[in-house]
Structure formats: C-alpha cells, structure tokens
Image (cartoon, rainbow, N blue to C red; front, side):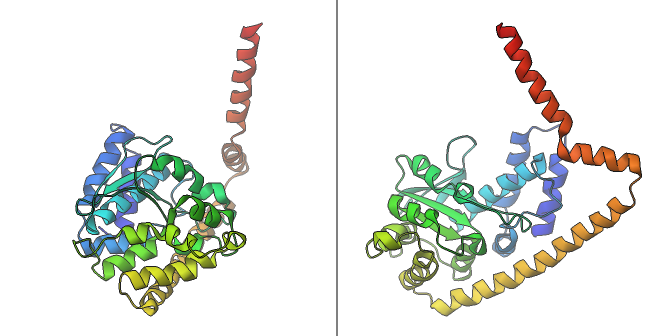
Length: 298
C-alpha cells in the first residue's frame, strides 16, 4: 500500500455506512500495521500533508487524522518499541509507546497540515496539552512535518523546553528507518525523546523561544547521539522538500480543476453550493436551538 492507495482506502471507508468510525479505524490500523518497511517509509514521506481532495471537517478527514496516529504507532514499533493507538480521542494522547528493553514509556501526538492552510498558531501544535497527556509517562513526543514548524521564533519552542516535550518530525523518523535505527541493549532512544531536557541545559531563558534550538542544535545533537552524519539528515530534508513541492503542484491542479468545474455551474446550483459552503442553515439552526432552550427556562 502506497500513499495514494491509503488515501483511496480512507475515502472508501468514510462512505461505508454499514461500519462505525471505530470499526473503520480498526480496519485501517490492521492495514497500516501490516505494511512492509518500504511502503511504511513511502507513507511517512507524504502523510504529513493532508490531501486537498479530502473534504475539510469530514469523516474522511477524521480517518486521515487517525491514520497519522496509526502510522506513528507503527513507526515506533519499527524502532523497537511496543506501541498502540489510544482508542480515546478527547483529552488524551493519540499514541502510547513503551521500551521493553529500557523500561521507559512515552506518549506521542501526530500532526498533518494542508498546504493551503498557512495560518497556524501555537494551539495547532498542542504542546501545552501534551504536558497534561504525559501523565505518568516519561516522555512526550510531538511529530509534525518539519517544514510546518514555525520558521521564526515561537512560544512552542519555549513551551517544549520548559516541559521537556520532544519536537520531532516525520522526516526525522524517516531518517531513523533509513538508517535501520532500532532499540537494543546498547542503544537507548530515550536520548532522542529527551532532547528538550538536553537543550534546556545550555539555552538561556531569553533565547528559549528561538527555532534554532530545535532546528539546528537539536538536529546536530540527535545525529551525534545516533552516530549519523548531519549531512545525511540535511540531504533527507532536501529530498522531502522536493516531495512536498511535487505534492503542492498536484494539489494546485486539483483546485484548478475545481475552479473550472464551478465555472460550469448553473446560477441555481452556484447559489446552492455557496449556501452549503457558508453553512448558513446550520448557523440558523444553532441559534434557534439556543434561543429555544432559553425560552424553556422562562
């Protein structure tokens, strides 16, 4: 299964009215956990970008989000940890992993973003939430597309340092798999998950929000810890950047086709589609429901 096949499967499952979301998620988990390493790596390369043809705020988008959690759990397994996807969605971590060799545990949160969404803020990364989700676990790992992390200084970097949250990327995980990194008695990956604690040892308070801490110092430290030449990570970033550019070109084509399709709408259909897009009837319904509840209180 490659990425396009995964997307097709997600779309099909989202339209299957005979199955609950939980059932579809379980089917998706079995498929991803059965992936061979080659296909897993191909999916990791692209899973950080939500396809534009996946409808926003839809069942298929929720299934895609679930797929990122499952891919992260599957990747942790490939790195030698036992891992599973948390079946709960509210106020808890998406992924739980444990080292059976070194005894530590961690929580993980997977992130994917649309290329068409440029406005992101610190709440999108949920670094503060991960502090609560960590609970009794030793580490918390946020996995986000590398090029979606803030390029300028951001409070998420300071929050990560203050609370020992590991800011990692899909690209980092891909490098680990490329290099056949896996825990053993002689290799303890907690040094990676503990990167924020390491960085906080020399980053001053006035510099804690700087992105250079993770994107330069952090990368150098991780590569040194795993005995990987830093230029190999840089080369992988370049490869992934090219992949994103190619994806971006294909996503543009999708929207250009949508524009041409809309141009062919009749006046009546155009109004209907606009009303649907603005969700005006839903807004009216929500207001009516609220004021009706107030009337009942009289």
